[in-house]
Amino acid sequence: MNASLYNPSAQNWLIRNKLYHLPFWVLYNFTWWTVAMGNPVKAFAAIFFTAFILKFLFYVVFQALAVYFNLYYLIPKYLAKGRFTQYLVALLLTITAASLLIIPGYYLSAFFSGQTMQQAYGANGDCFYGYLGTSLPSTLAAMTLAMSIKLGKNWLQTQRRQQVLEKEKLETELNFLKHQFNPHFLFNTINSIFFLIHKNPDMASASLAKFSELLRYQLYECNDRQILLSKEISYMENSIELEKLRQNDNVSVSLRIDQENSGQWGIAPFILMTFVENAFKHVSKHTDRHNWIRIQLDQEQGQLNFLVSNSAADVVSSDIVHYGGIGLKNVQRRLDLLYPGQYSLDIQHNGSSFEVRLQLQLTPLELPQPMQKIA
Image 1 (cartoon, rainbow, N blue to C red):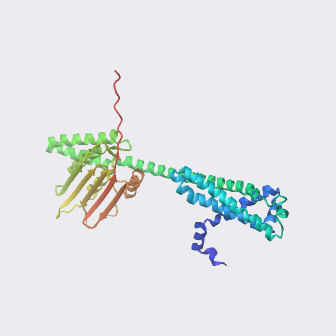
Image 2 (image 1 turned 45 degrees about the vertical axis):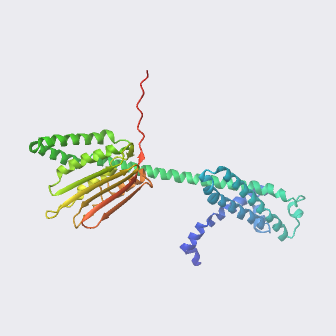
Image 3 (image 1 turned 180 degrees about the horizontal axis):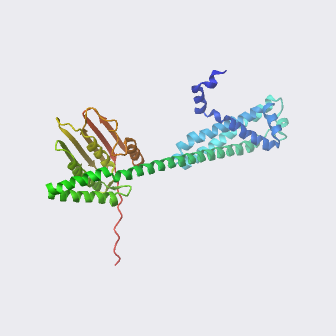
């Protein structure tokens, strides 16, 4: 057996250079010959059993070259960048050049068949530009057909990609909805406030107010794709205060927020809280050492830097990278969907601590304009 047929590198070379398209172009030009001669058997005999195969090969080779030059050079360089005039000029020159390069195939076929041009092609066999009337429309049709196939293929790929993104988005939203109403968090917070009622009524009242604001935020204020950064920070602060109620005295929590100007910058809801909840969930429970959580937010115009770190046990469970029931993969997928190319996420675990660094490029949030009163 021929080893090259089973060589992956040879197959990749064929695919990379589009040689597997060759049968298509042979069939395409054979169809043209069949239409011109009116009989596929005569067309097959004329092509493959005479010197006129040279003319046929000129059509196949130069039309294929023109097609791929257009698809993989002209379209990305000009059309995809909106340079329509340059693209049209280059496309017309390519079609004309390919049509002209096909014409020598007529002369070579006649020469190797031992005929004059008149014998091979009739009384007007010496008319150079007469052949252009055949090669030009054939080349134009080949270019049109190839572009139609390419555009149709790209459209189908875009549709499939969009369907995958929509499916992932729906799955993420369902998991996100479960995360919003975490019963474990709700019950523990309510229990903490219940015990505070007898121990410290004032603190219990303040905690209940924060809890009420937190629920209102979850139910009514975070249903949009983006919300004000200031609201997300306020929610985070309230959640941290409530989380502190559930922690032992040997866990210290520090929060530092440095904002140049929160303005009208927007952010997707619960992006920040996902990492904060992870820190509270996986903070170490040492009895002989200090346990800590540090949260730092720096925002300067559209650049947000968010750092969450916590002390960790020496042996960390395998689910430490699962954030609040959503999981690291889903968190990153959500960031990919909402902030493609606009974020960097770095997660480090060095044994005694766990650290998450998020850099996010914010976008201004367009708020609805208040309606003007009509005088």
